[in-house]
Length: 147
Image (cartoon, rainbow, N blue to C red; front, side, top):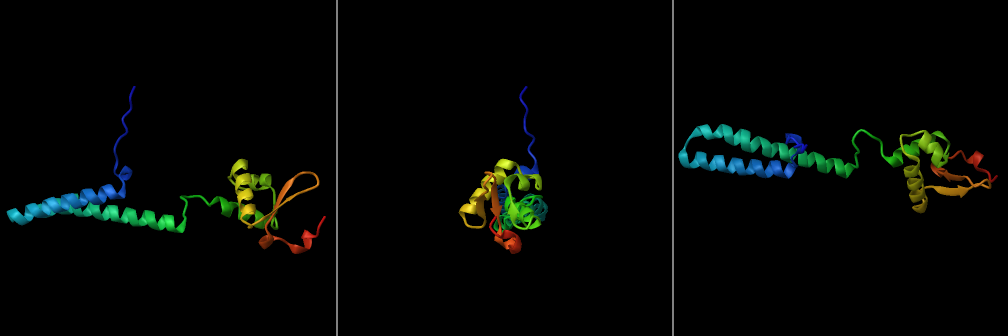
């Protein structure tokens, strides 16, 4: 059985709304201009101007959200890792972060490794082979004496 996806207003891109609205506004505006009929004002507004305004607002909202780096409803991976590091005085393991966040262990391991490569965190391997990460910004420096 083949299912058809129902077309709804929210699935349209902002550009589609802008271009469709502009086309209808121009068409009904020209019809009003050449015929002199004021009844073309209503379709021009409802089929042209309003969709165009809707598309512009969606476009500006989408751009501002990207510039600010917002993620819908969730904290970023980095923020969750930093929050766990702060709670544990700067010293974390991938398992500890995964346990105290909603992140999967593999994602935590990769992100901590990336952060270490960029110099945001120090990676240490204990004598027992456990990998620990140290965030100096949150560390209690009295507890960091070499073991």
